[in-house]
Picture 1 (cartoon, rainbow, N blue to C red):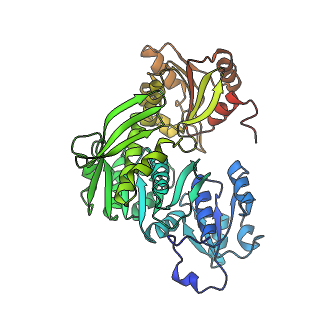
Picture 2 (tube, rainbow, N blue to C red; picture 1 turned 120 degrees about the vertical axis):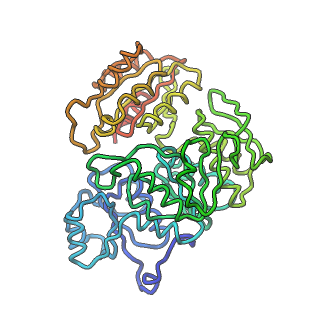
Picture 3 (tube, rainbow, N blue to C red; picture 1 turned 45 degrees about the vertical axis):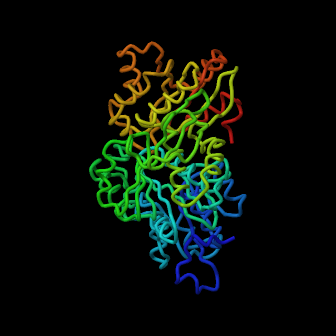
Length: 475
């Protein structure tokens, strides 16, 4: 089925055959979503990635061919038919053999952000921006709009259980997660920009698409907002309104007095939080989010606000959000171990880690965290804050840093975090790089009153699966 809310560029429409898009890095969470959306609009799609994963296997099962590895031959001697457009991240060097071969063959090379820009500008659109909470908020908006009968399309940086996918095709508004880790996002805009927060992430270092300074990154947020029709900003996050002075229309959400959409009368319990939603002083109704933490109340409030803005029925949207279990790796309930609840979470910077720890505390259980620091640069920039964010956990087992292709930085090590925590009086922190030992320790000591949370943007999720099922992390 072709999605009428997605673009069909004029030059393409006259072609007797649909365009063939080849996506480099198709196994990534974003590129795989593009692949699914493009195929849904009738395009021919293929791709390649460095390794075979669950996601590439799923794409193949859906009829999207995926080659393992990168090669100029994918362009010069394609095994899946002549390529019309090669889509690649801006992070791929222009000297890459596939890109060089495409240019020499006269094949259009389209950056992924240019493709997202087309989707956002094709019709009614909601772009979710901010340093934290984008994936969960985007998922909640898409689920809420679906429940309210608005039939959205969606582009999400995680697997949404309700869709069984990171993409959804519908005839209504297009909801997209817009990632600031690619500087090209600042060239985009949407009918509605949902602005969750702004902090210092994806800044510095030698990553091709990262920002030189946090000021430049925040200017990128401001540019996106100015290029959008309106902004719905989180009133609880200091400084956001100052980044929205160029907005054509400003609405706000949060607990703060004066917010247009407010969450009031919060009633937290071990499984989530119930709350009342008001709009400019008038009660819209009761809502619930089945994920702990105030940050998830705010994410759900943003989704309900968007549903209200687009004419959806509040009660219907609230009902589906109450049953929402979260996207993959965002407070994901993996299972149990000896009665202990096992959770996996993507939290990898200090603000996200602190929010995840507080969510764990809300369960009323003993909080046991397995934390894998992510990237040497991020650890260098924030290890004191990471240590402080983990202090409220009862026990912390620290793995080695997940390099994510970065070169190690001398003197930057996970023990910086454990050392600061111990110096500040935490008696339950251990540097434990041997994963087999982590599994042994937790398997032998897990009890019904525990919540075990694996945290990080690396492959720490495999430990959560193995704790629940020793074969769970294997292909």
